[in-house]
Image 1 (cartoon, rainbow, N blue to C red):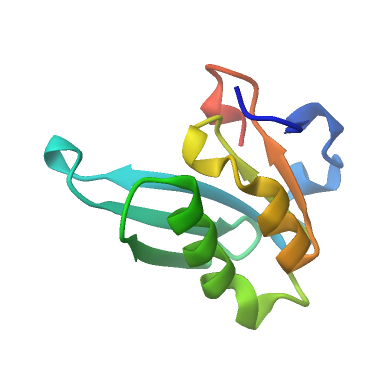
Image 2 (image 1 turned 180 degrees about the horizontal axis):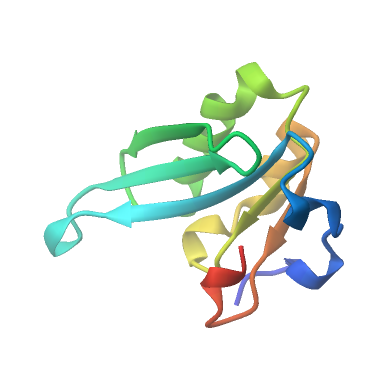
Length: 113
C-alpha cells in the first residue's frame, strides 16, 4: 500500500468538468515480458500528451521522469491523478517539486482517474 496517498474523493469537482487547464492523469505502459516502460501524462482539458521512456519500472525513475517532463509546465500543473501502482509511491516528492496535489483512484478502480 502506498503511504500518505490522497484519495480521489478529496479532489475538486472542477477536475471532472474538463473546463480548467492543469489537471493531469498519469499511467504506465509496460512492454512485453515486462521489459521497458513508458510514462504517459495526459492533461484532461486539452488532451495534451507527454510520454517518457523509463529506465526502469520503479518509483524513483518514474518520479524523476515525471518531474523532468512536467517542469516546463510547472506553473500550470494543479493536480495529478494515478492508479495505485507502487511505481507512484514517490508521489509526495513529485508533489513537492511540482507544487501540485497528487491523487489516487480507489483500489481496483483505475478508470476513475
